[in-house]
Length: 140
Image (tube, rainbow, N blue to C red; front, side, top):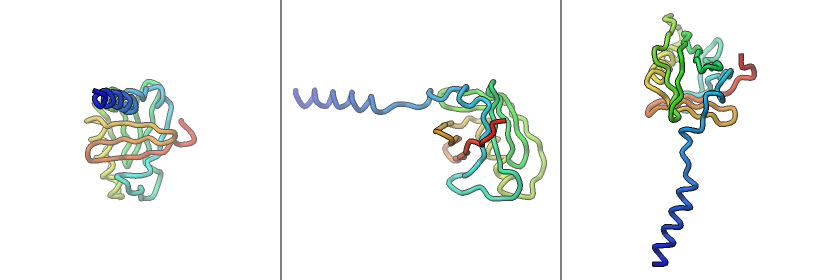
């Protein structure tokens, strides 16, 4: 009986330590923030020109640029950021990585990506892709 009580007590303590962060990020935490893309699936972003970025306004409208600009109304639910009916310019970029990033961000936001904001780092992740951004000094 003591072993069972000990196991029950340990389970309760451990379950208190495991917290789901899915509902902790609020739209207000992203409001008026700009982030610059630093890594894609663990690899540093390459290329010339302005760094790819993502921005959030106070109403969780999302905009940014990889090669092409993108924009749409974001929705944050259970730790997942979704931008349905995202608009995007359609230019061909001479940088192959940027072209691929256009497709990546479109798919991630259209289908929904887990989003995490830790200090100055924003992470967007799906089962197959992870984008890590760093908060830019100027939000606007």
